Length: 640
Image 1 (cartoon, rainbow, N blue to C red):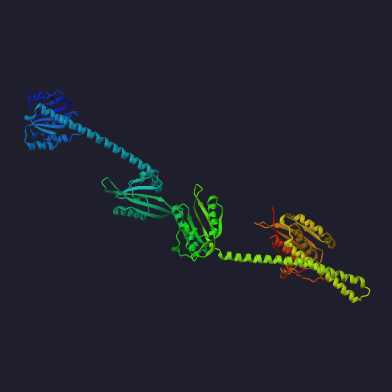
Image 2 (image 1 turned 90 degrees about the horizontal axis):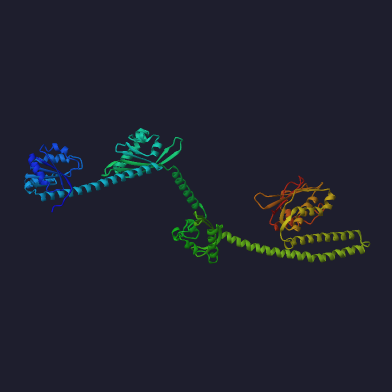
């Protein structure tokens, strides 16, 4: 049984009307076929009458040659096109094959066109038409999808290039602009409409335009990317550096259709690069010219950079010491290892200062002292990722310090021995001296009337000498006790101490009608008794060494950027020449005879020893004798 199919068939025939009706009745034996038969007329004339819904065009003709023009007209018809089945009364096999090759779906001889055969042929035509329509729909969908992707891609591209900070443009093979983003147009000072279709010669000086075109031709001819950096001078006279990248542009077939360029301002980047290069050069010069070695430790990789000078300090050539942390760690003196590693750890944890001295083993096997300083670099998470610093050989200083300590200890021991000796000697001498003085005075008392005048003078000389000897011994005893009998230093009000000094000197001040003034005096770190002794000696000397009415002024001021306080005791006395400015502070050194000014020559020596015990220094601002007095200065540590 023949399958029933719904198919719109248009039958064209060159037979008579009567024969056409017979053909229609023949075809209608397949009742599902919707058949229309056009009357005999010119085949070309009826092409315009073929309905658009026609699926199959059945052409029933006398000979195959008459269908040529119909095939040509059918091929020129817009889609959708019906399939053509040709039924011919007389036709050779070659003629049938030729018709199929030229576009006919099938060719049948009229003698073979039975109802089953014809229906089967139409059914196959329907299936082929369906496949064609399906394929056509798929192609149409694919084309639409591709077109949509192209539109989306173009929209994305335009959105991208319009929002980039770079200047982007395209040109055709004649150098005409075919695209320019808004940044390019803004830089050129023109709208997009004014740029498109123009060339470089329309916007730039001739020499620049010629250079740009030469670069474009190079890119197109070599098919290679061109990257350059170009320098210009802005309207304000500033240097402007631009990075330019140009590439060839190809169509879908791979043919070169132009070029595309992109450029952007790299002036700041260039300045930064040049500054970095200059900084590196300065650093390299500093490293080469420095006596210190440089090290740079990458904490995350545990690699460390040692400069040539670093390795040289250890006795190595540059290639003899690897840039590894262990090369440093393994050379630390065993007794210093814990100290050095702990200092590293503490600095990385708490940013404690990293500045210490320890010993490292050199190539010779000897250990030398080095001062190592460094600073950690931290990331945004406050984690140390790098540490760099310097190293310097301090062996000679360390050896000198050791020698100095040994000498200092020897001197301190010697001074202690001398102080002990002076104390013992002065103490032991006082008793026989007292005995001599007592017996001489007893001799004078008992035999004064029996002795002559010369004898009495001799006895007077002896008693006076004994008294002076006692004062000298007392002064020596006082001098020796400064370092051994002094109290601990403590915050002391120098104002209160000075008031006690004035009370002690009240009689001498009244006798000489002296005027002693002072500014407010600060608190200092001192031994109160020795501070009073120091001030009393200086003010007492000012009262003593004055030929007129003494005028003394005491003041004190804190030195800038220091904890020290500088005291001044200024008088209007006889003055001191510059050549004697140091001599007066030595023990038993006098500038005047006892007949002119009494004293033992110990007072200023005591002053110096007191000041030095307090960690300060004492001196005198010198002048010529008689030209306005002296100004004694000394420093002590102040207290807030």
